[in-house]
Image (tube, rainbow, N blue to C red):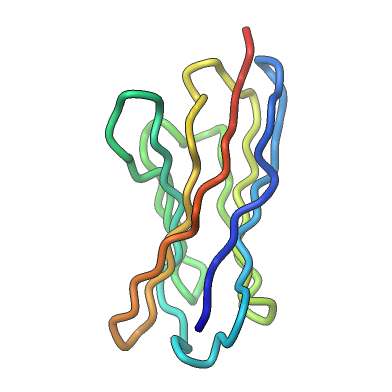
Length: 119
């Protein structure tokens, strides 16, 4: 069974940067080929929101809250996705989740990684 595991979260001061990773753990072949991958976040007391997505071919889309500060990327050979976050603000504090869609309908979520931005 395959799982996707986020890493790279932590505590950072406002204006700082973090790089999140989402990597496959286990047998990836059960959901290959992977179609779209995405990053979501859930701030305290709020609903989960979409930040960015990237297709297998590399086409990216960003929510307004991520445009200009966050960059999504992926390494298909490593079945890994990244989120580079710059100029972080206290309002970016949230649990960040990765989502992976397989072309045959698989829909997997990671367990989340906490990002806390102090003012």
